Image (tube, rainbow, N blue to C red; front, side, top):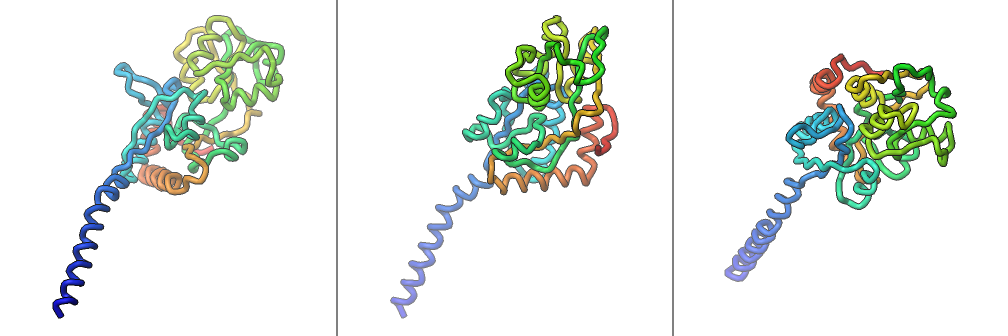
Length: 258
C-alpha cells in the first residue's frame, strides 16, 4: 500500500513538472507575433504618415482581421522589389501590399481570399492623346518593378524593351512621368488615381480591356494555418460591416464587388 501511494505520488509530481515546464512554451505560442511586410510607398493602401507610422487601407484591413482573430501583428515597411524574398526567407510571415493574385505567383506562394478588386490604370499628361494600352507602343512608360503593370507592359513591348522604365515604387513612376522622363505610367487603379489627383497636369486613362484583378494577402506555400486564420478574420470583417467602413474611409465610396 505504501509502495502504491508513493508510486502514484511520484507520477503526479512528474506530470505536474511537465505541465509547468510546458506552460512557457504554450504561452509563447499563444503570444506569437505575426510579422507582416508591406511596402509603404503605395498610398492609399500603405504609406508613412507624419510620424512615420505605416498607415493605409491595407494596414487597417490586416489590423481589423488580427483583432477579430486575437492575433498580435508587427508591420514591417519592406520595399516591394524584395518583399517576396523577405517572405521566403522567413523575415516576414505574411505580405499585404496590393499584391495581385495570379497563376504565376500561386506557384510559389499561397493567398487568402481576395480583399480588394482592382484593375490597371494609365496615367498620362493632360495633353496626351493616349486612350488605351495599345497607344503606348513606341512611347516610354514607367512601372513598378515586378508588378502586374510590369507584366502587362512586358508582354506588350517585350521584357527587354528600352521603353520600359522600372522603379521601386509608385511615387517614383509618377514623378518620372511628371518630370517628362516618360510618356505614361501604369499601375493599380487605387494608387494611380490617388497619386494623379495630387499631381497637377496629369490625368488617368481607363482601358476596358484590362482584366479584372484581385488583391490577396500572401503567405508562404503550405502555411495553411496562418492562411485559414486570415481568411476567417477577413470573412468576419466583411460580415459585420467593418470592411465597408474601411473602404469608405479610404476610397470615399461604398464597396461594390466587381
